[in-house]
Image (cartoon, rainbow, N blue to C red; front, side, top):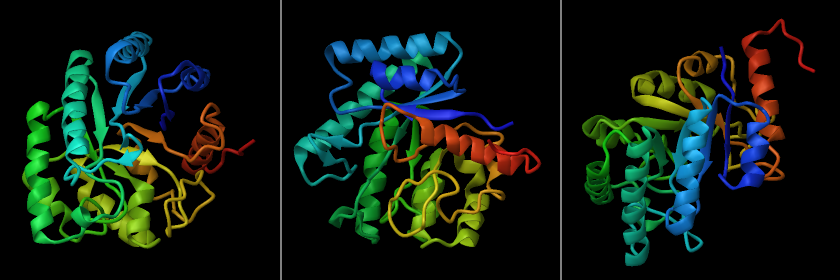
Length: 266
């Protein structure tokens, strides 16, 4: 049976909107100041409340620091220090509540994400440091371009296998890495299946990071459904309004209809 997984911030406006749909899984996307002082207390209280009510909870490492996308091998010392400090704090929070956290080695194209041996060695060293904070805490998510992506033909050999990394497989990111090739997408999912612990489910045209509702892009979902039946996942749609999860819920109904083709959608 397909589960409903929703993503949002833990602030009341977004959280209450998600909870009205009674999801099975909630992923809380964090901002750079959510891990300190009163905000950390509020975050941990929210986690405790959700767990007590039976929700499966995941956190998402902040994607930016002071407006700049994070990168595990940052050239700016301040960003580098924040990446590690925030990872240490998240490891503490996740260990205390027995939950897990999604983390990106990188988001956007940069000199440090160009695919070559020197950058690979640097990233492996930094990942090893993060793993010392909590090996069983972090789930590593693929981006679109660069080292830690489906675009890199040695992604598995250089990172996933030697470091035994549990993955968050973002289906649309991989689809874009493969330039919209559904066969390459499915082939890689089959190969990485033992390493995938969690999915981000979102459609795409396969050209840019468009974050489309399911059915609005070119991903063929029927062959993917079996992968989703035995693992947690959330819908990660680019919402028109962050306080309204309608497009995520509609994507779930679309997927359920593909899983049970005799069911007529409303």
